[in-house]
Amino acid sequence: MKAGVWPLFRVLLLAVGAIVISPAAGAAGRPNILFLLTDDQRWNALGCMGDPNAVTPHVDRLAHAGVLFQNHFVTTAICGSSRASIFTGQYMRRHGIELAGDHFTPEQWTQTYPALLRQHGYFTGFIGKFGVGGSNVGAQFDYWRGLPGQGGKYFIEPGDTNRLHKTALFGNQALEFLGQVPSNRPFCLSISFNAPHARDGTPQPYMPDDRDVSLYAEKILPAPSNATKEFHDKLPKSVQESEAHRRWQERFSTPEKYQANVKDYYRLITGIDREVGRILSELDARGLTKNTVVIYTSDNGYALGDRQLEGKWFMYEENFRDPLIIYDPRETAAHRNRNENAMTLNIDFAPTMLDLAGLTPPAGMQGRSLLPLVRGERPADWRTEFFYEHHFGAKALPPSEGVRTERWSYIRWVNESPVIEELYDVQADPLEGHNLAGEPEFAPVLKQLRASWERKARELK
Image: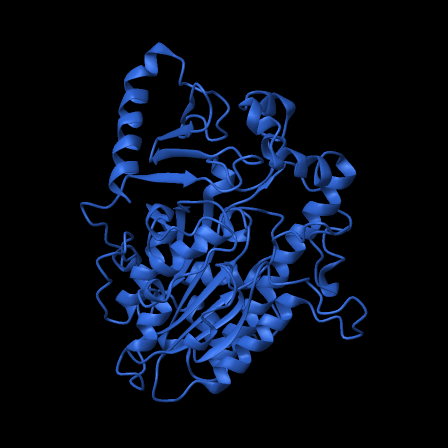
C-alpha cells in the first residue's frame, strides 16, 4: 500500500484492540452507509478469503478491521433478480423481478432501502450498473449515475487516449458524490461495479485496467479442483448442454483460454480494490470515516470452469455463494477483526441498512438485519437453511430450486420429467462431487429436504 492511503483506516486496524470509536454527531448519530457491490465475484476471490492469487489489499484490510462473513449466499444467482432482492429484501418469488428487462413498479420502489432512507432524511446516491430493467428510478436519488443493462463497455471509447476504465470512472463519481453530501445529512451511497462480469460477444471479455495488465504475467493460475470432465459428466444432461457449458468452451476450455481469461478476471477484481482504497481515503480526508458503515459484497458467485461450466445460475456453491464484509467503526474492538459463520443472504441487506438508520423494515421484507451478527450476537432463531430458486432462460439454462442447510444442499431441477434431484453433504463433500439422492441410507434426509422445499416454495410467495 502506498504511504498516505486511507491512513485513519490503517490506524484503526493497528489499534483494533485498543479503541472504541463513537459516531459523529453531525447526523444525529445515524451512520453513513457505503454499499459496495461487485458483479459476478465468486465468494473466495479475495485475499482475505484465502485466495493467494487475489491482489486485494484494501478490501483485505477492510475485512481485518470489520467482520468477514464466511457463509453468505444469494437466493437467486443472476444479476437482475439478485439486485432486486438486495433493494427490496425479498425473494424473487415475492418481488417478481425475473427477466432482464423487468422494472420495479412505483409502489415497489417506495419499499426499497434507497427510497425509505431518502424519505427519512438520507442523502442518497447510486453509481454504476443498476441491473433491474432500465434506469426508471434515477430521479428518486439525490445523486444518480446509474447505467442500464450491463453498464456498457469497460472502456468509455475504444480509441479514447485517456483509456479510462469503467471501474475507475465509478471511483471518480464516488469522490464527486462525497463532495456533494450536505454536512447536516447522513448519506447512503450504493456503488454497483460492473466488474468482473464478462462483456459478452467481445474478443477480450474480462478486459482490465491498463495499470493491471502486468499482473500474473509470470504466473500460472490453477483451475478449480472440480473443473474436470468427471464432474461435468455427473451433471444432468440439460446442464451439460446448457449455455453455461457453451461459455466454458468459449472462454476456459483450453489452458491458453483459461489462463488469459482467468488472469483478466482477477485483474478486474484488483481494479475494484484500487477504487475501494481511493474511496476509503476520501472518507478519511473528509472526516467521515468514524461514522461510515461499509458493506462489501457481490450480486452472485461465478463458476470459473468448475464442472466445465462458466457463469452463475445453478445451485452449486461456486455459483450462489458470495463474499461479504461489513465494517462498522462504531463497534468495539471485540466485535471487529473476526469471522462470522452464520448463514446470511442478499435479502438481508435492505433490513440491515434500515436498521442502521434506526428504521423498522416494512412487513414485506423477508430478510433480517445483520447488525446482531456484526455485534457478535447470534439470535436463537437465526436461520439454518434457506430456499433457492432460478427460472430465467429456461431453454438455455435449466431452472432449479432447492434448499441449502448448514450441512446439506438439496437441488431440484424443476423442468425435468421426471424431476431430477441432487443431494450433497457440503461439510464432507464441499466440491459436491457425490450425489447422495439415490442412496437408501440418505432417503430420510432427502425426504425431509424435499418437504422443506415444498413448504418454503408455498410460503415465501
